[in-house]
Image 1 (cartoon, rainbow, N blue to C red):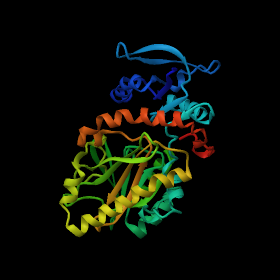
Image 2: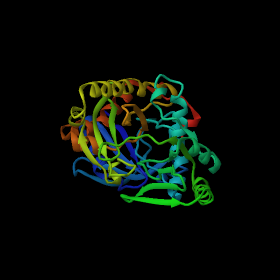
Image 3: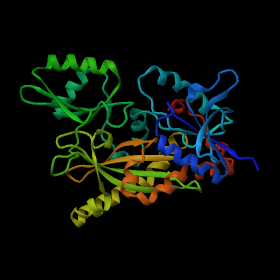
Image 4: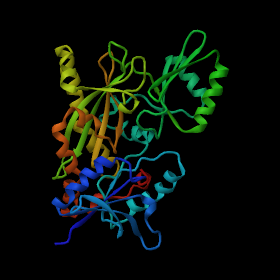
Length: 369
């Protein structure tokens, strides 16, 4: 019986090495040949790939040339570098091919995502968001709200987020870089506008009101919920955890120096009426969000949902990631390792066995994501 070909694409062959090795080592047991490659390694003429094939006999990767696998798992994380710019259209081309199926087709940027969800039953959970097109708009909002957040529309892991506050006589700007909080005071509007103009010229930003999403120790925190489709194509919650950042900071991401707390332990520290309400709200979001996203965009395989709980008890959808990491779940729920490593293979087998070619309908605006 011919094995099915399962390919994992990333922008370099070091990215997520342990996770990808764990998947590959289980592929043969599922009757699957596992490959990994970089999109730019595809020959544009022959469509053959120069990449790696996992050899289960020697439990190692071997360089070889092979045809494009019919099933692909996209783990490409793009930056502003030239190689990213080269690979983005190649991946878009792969996603447009009728003979190739992706486990998940990704999500658009934060602005498109927000716009799509703002017409659904989850609209009340979205922080009010607009594109920051110019510095005058930011100043106008500051006069009304005093505290704002600027988020890169295409950002990930919290990079490039700025807190902007209007004081009586000056403006306070704060961000986090390399696990350090960086603060700056602008003495007047002119200086702030000059800084804002440069920032908004460098990339597109989303403007949101600042939400009080910190605990009693002034540490920012959020709830990370990890969802995947199972071997029958149904959405399944794998786990959830609390990410806590540095005192006075903006980010709870582990890459920014955050720490983890078990969700049940955290919820148990809240008053009874508080934890019941918050748990019900989070469950409601999780129940509806994956289906609303797939109704609007292309099919997905997994989601990392970041949920904020404000000091007044309000619950907010902060971010939705279609290429989530596994750190939170693996550190808090070690018993789920096998489930997480098998999941892409089992869902891939389900897609192949079901012949779900119709799962891919073409929304051109989402193909590049």
